[in-house]
Length: 209
Ligand SMILES: Cc1cc2nc3c(=O)[nH]c(=O)nc-3n(C[C@H](O)[C@H](O)[C@H](O)COP(=O)(O)O)c2cc1C
Image (tube, protein in one colour):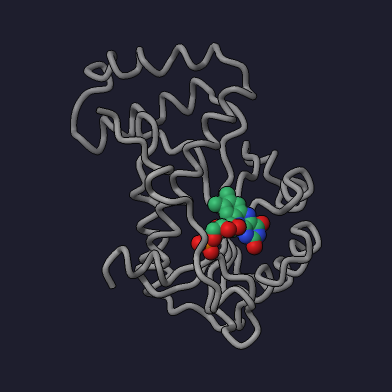
C-alpha cells in the first residue's frame, strides 16, 4: 500500500472485532515506534503494551467506556518520563558511546546542550517528554495503517486514574495518550463509511512567497 492509500484507508476506529493481530505485524508496528525521532534522540518515554483482557476491562471505565479498549487486540499506553534526571542523561550518553564506539568524553558538546534542561521544572520537562511521545504516536499510526492494522489514538481517558492502575509513578512515568490496535468491526462501526473531514489544503498550508 502506498503511504497515501494507507492514510486514506485508516480511520480512528470506533468498533473493533476482538481478533488478534498477527505477531509479525505487531512486531513491525513496535519496531517502527522504536525508530521514531525524538529531540536529541533521548526517547523520554516508554510504551506499555497491554493485551491482558482482565487489565483492559479495568482500563475501559477509566477511558469513558470506549469499546475499542476491550475490543482491541492490544492497547499501547504512551507514557512519558515524569521528570528528567542526571542519571537518565548519563545513561543516554553511555548508549551513544557504546553504539557508535566513541568515548563518553567525546560527547561533551552534546551533553552540554542537554544538561541545562535539568534546571527546568519537572512539569516543563514532562511536557517536553510528552511532545516527543506524540511523535512516536504519529509514527505508530502510519505504521499500523501501512500494515493494514486498524488503530485508534485516544486522549479520552483519566490520566491520573490510569497512572494509579498501572503504577506508573513508581516507574517514573505519566500516561500521555493511548492507541488501540486491532481489526475494524465494519458492520457495527458508523464511521467506516463516512468521508474524512480535513481542512482544505489552501488553508492548511500557507505558502510563503
Ligand atoms: C491525540 C488524539 C486523541 C484522540 N482521542 C480520541 C479518543 O479518545 N477516542 C476516539 O474515538 N478518537 C480519538 N481521536 C481520533 C480523532 O477524533 C480522529 O483522529 C479525527 O477525528 C480524524 O479522523 P480520522 O483519524 O478517522 O481520519 C483522537 C485523535 C488524536 C490524534
